Image 1 (cartoon, rainbow, N blue to C red):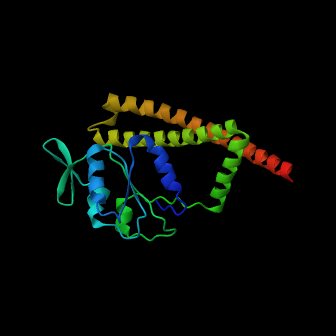
Image 2: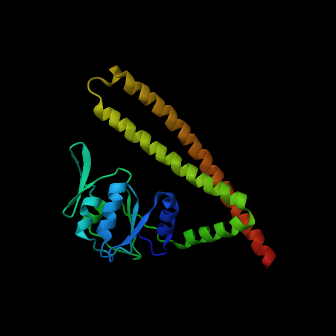
Length: 223
């Protein structure tokens, strides 16, 4: 995560606060030992202040080089074989505003730009003001944002499920009752989710307009 204003770090700490998040820095001499503990226990791990060059020792983590040995998932980290817990999550953040990562890094990790532009900063400051003046309005805004994100994620999961079923089906598709049933359920679910998204996005625009009015009225009172 490209994070010059520490937006991502705040988000991750808030999201993983109940999961015993571990923080590391590549300058820490024993950071691999901490990563190993997190892999084994399934705790999330956040690596801060990453530069453009990454330690090759992290390659097995980034490529998810997990092998099944004796019925147990194993990841080899350095010269050690570590039992892999599927709940393990690994985050990296950099303070560099415009880093240039090699193509092989991009293929191993999802790169997300958290740098705040003027419009985003304006929205955040507006949210702070409205949260003080009309907390119920900002609570509705936050709820809608989460709802829209969950709806879009559900649509992606449905698409993945359909692709998997189509790939696994052998013979005629029309003769696979389970596939046809799943297709119908997915179709109806997708329609419902899409309608919810349309309604939520329309409501979000109304809330944004109300936020602007609230901020304008507050500014007028001051002047």
